[in-house]
Image 1 (cartoon, rainbow, N blue to C red):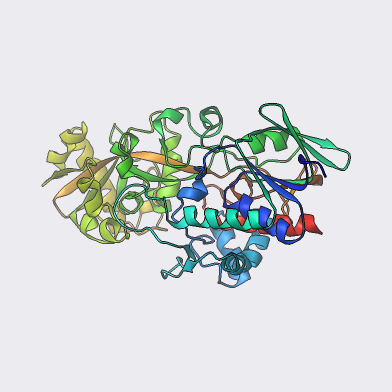
Image 2 (image 1 turned 135 degrees about the vertical axis):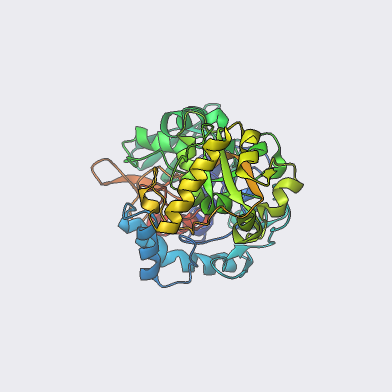
Length: 459
């Protein structure tokens, strides 16, 4: 083979791509990874991840059927059954395979049974150098090179073309490659403002960019140009709620987040109206707020019991006390009437919305509120002074829509047939997350699709 010809080309050097590349090389294939960044520690979501592998906040060690039910539950039946079943079946084997690569996984309890080491779970802000995803990617790259794999940095793929015997790959700078199989693993499109504007929010500049800043949707667009099927719903994303100061102060993201406070209390807009069903939690609320005309116009209202209880202090990096300690705005007053002017509301407006919420909670009629309130997350009364208001922003980490693949990670065309030689893995794959309330399947666990892709194409 020439230096530009390979059995397998993987587009993207995140964890899904590096799993696919290493596994294909283990199986005797000549593999290249095309990574657009030139940096040795190129930034991507996998590099800065906190490192927990889970399926809908459930350990990959759980029984396959239980995990499939978890996926169906969180996506309300919208996930593709073939790829959901494949990840549920093979997720545990991915954990075993990673350990075989020399990657240490920690058991921190609950759903954190497989967490990349070294663990980073203290203080506020983003700390990634020498932790979790950074260490895992370094190990996978070293293993890949020991298997004679080619890591080609500074190579941004711009086009794919089906050809006799494989796929032709075009890259910036007029570089050309050819491979019998291509695995697209370049993530979602959260870093592409125009795509975010088209599918998610009319104001992408008013969303906190809580990600590596590199996923531009290139693989999605190239696959679609080859006739690939994509998810019909592209508007959902994985994200969280943060103090509004996180928009300008990096110390306030990715931790602490304010999801638990929002799910326990109420979230109102600048006019004092509740904006969405808080009971579905922070990820759903992030999506709902992003769709508002002004995503920076919302505030969480809660009381001392919430602030001092599990919603405020229960997380390992909790908003209480990290938000005020790190400079996030937190308004506090002995009464709702005194709190209201601090956020630009008339006292009667704030008192009315809180009273209506408390009354519905007492009467068991939360579903009659407008908007209705569900109880997937426990609703807390807002009665115990002092009272608090936290202005928030919504943060986008990764998009959920993407390329459709089958249970073998083969990219399907619009007629449901595999496109010869084309595979996809990781967060560029759609059909797992989503549904009416932006159900979150899991991020890192999608590297399982990279393992599946390598083993499918090797056959």
